[in-house]
Image (cartoon, rainbow, N blue to C red; front, side, top):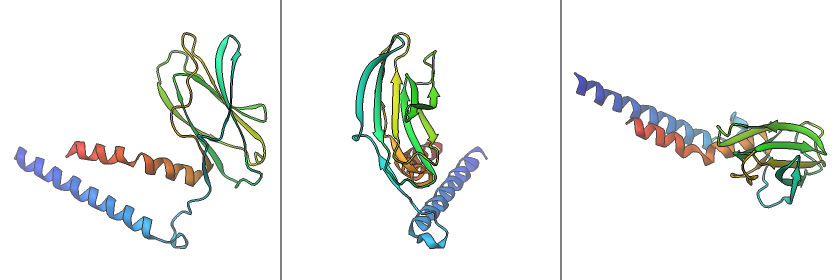
Length: 171
């Protein structure tokens, strides 16, 4: 009986994986006018920064600045990672987002930051501050800027392997 359940469980997972794969292939093949979300505008900002190193309140910091394009779509999202460091995001000098991990418990964290609608042409600055006993870390992953569906789609497509790995571990 136990062996029967084991095989039944495997067959169920294989069927579920096949249905998910079919849905993915079918969704990729649909033109956007048939209900699929349009991809939208996306920029990967990894090599387009002005870099500044400085001391802020007795902490080392690394700041990355980027001037946003003059015409941005309405729903813009910034996706950035921090690695054991505090993170601040400024838009034309105004604090937009702040994150701190004082006990260094989180490790690598992906931040999803909505930009205001009037952010076109403004200077975006991402500042990494060192921890109390460490140094300021550079960004660890890709930095994406674009429409929400494009940023999420890019992130999911680059990390889809994790879902397949998880399903394969259950089998």
